[in-house]
Image 1: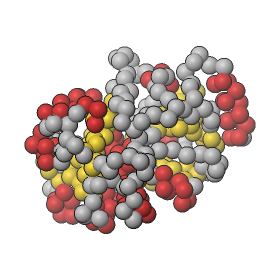
Image 2 (image 1 turned 60 degrees about the vertical axis):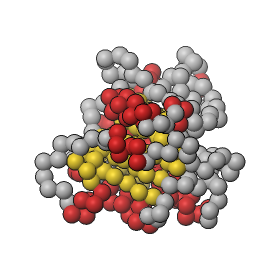
Image 3 (image 1 turned 120 degrees about the vertical axis):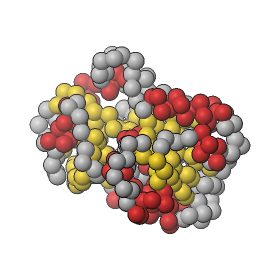
Length: 306
């Protein structure tokens, strides 16, 4: 079955579904979103996100490049040629694979600007035995055909009428993916708006992983911060580092978890908007620390992966 035919057939089958798929509703980026997986069993992506807004239309996509982002993470570049396809920085896609019944769910890690310039999006997928991730790591190749659909209320999409905010992006593990998209989008806005109100004031990224090998996109993150050091900054945290930290990473890397003291240095209760994505225990701790630092609950936005 060709992918356009696969997409049409899938669209028809979903149209009569059990109310899981709702039209996308424009939602304020200031809405706090929690993706809850309450069962101890591994729940299905469509179950977990049944109440989350998503677009109705499926789009054909072609895998045009595959890169090893780390020993356990592959980065896919997908060409999505349809002119109506769009997304906001921080959103995810339902990922449909012909011949695989299980639907994947992956945050887009590229910027909306890359889609506008080159017609592509990128996904960074960690290896697991879950069927879509297993397919990506073992069977996916350049020119593989898939289908995608955008969803999620966790995004940064500032409008000219919005007040200027400082962004604090806090990532744990592969929770970096949507925040990397937001960081890239902030950099794009700074490059192209020439002081326009859509651009954030200052953007700081706190990114925690077990060790420097598991810090995804680290070199590009540093390059972006070098480009506009007055507007962009980052800190990496490693919690189980057993080797010497690479020299080029040392100025940015801290041994240990993200502390309440560090968060206080980057919180302005009147101007900071925080996006947080990572393991649930980390989110709960950081969320509490941010509120202790004076940041109100409505200025802390997060996605929680159980």
